Image (cartoon, rainbow over all chains, first blue to last red; front, top):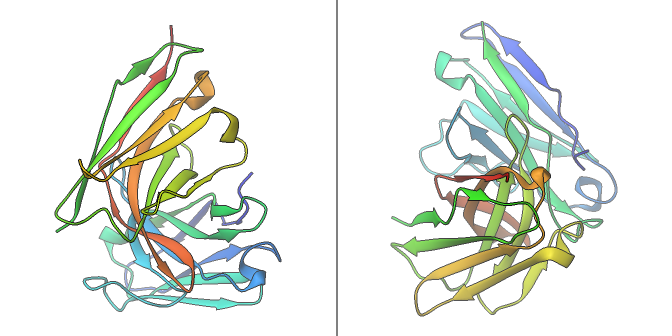
Length: 111
Length: 120
């Protein structure tokens, strides 16, 4: 039972745009805490994709963008490519944990 | 380039203590949140806890009674000790560096992860 809720799976064809939602509560996103996003390929460690709601680390393509509103956040991926197929996780601070909370993860399939 | 590397036993018996060390190279261990995160097989990420370079610790409430995270600045290492383990503690354990933006930590460098299995 994660403190942030993500859809278990999303899919899209190459070139399309997909979004992954991350729904929180007044204990985390709704309290104003920033949201970060990670990409995890099978058998590897997660890699930060978006930090501080919408900032991309150097090397992350601008096809990836993040946004936050109210108690939710979203990750958008445009121009979908085969190498985008991975698990994606959102993360924020949660007051009930007095620490870090992750979403349950979303598996992106590129059709 | 900052690199993190976990080390420790891959098999721990039930009721015993799981001990892991994370070695940090390519950068100083100061000014960040040094973090442990785990991922049970086939499941999502779970924050275990972190230690700030000042020595302050922050633990996941459900693990707090069994957990110790410590820092050795002289060796550029930090460690995890989780006591009284059960099969539910079987997971890939990652160490990570936590940077902050507006006070919320995000993890910019990760170790490769180490699978720890709890079994007799």
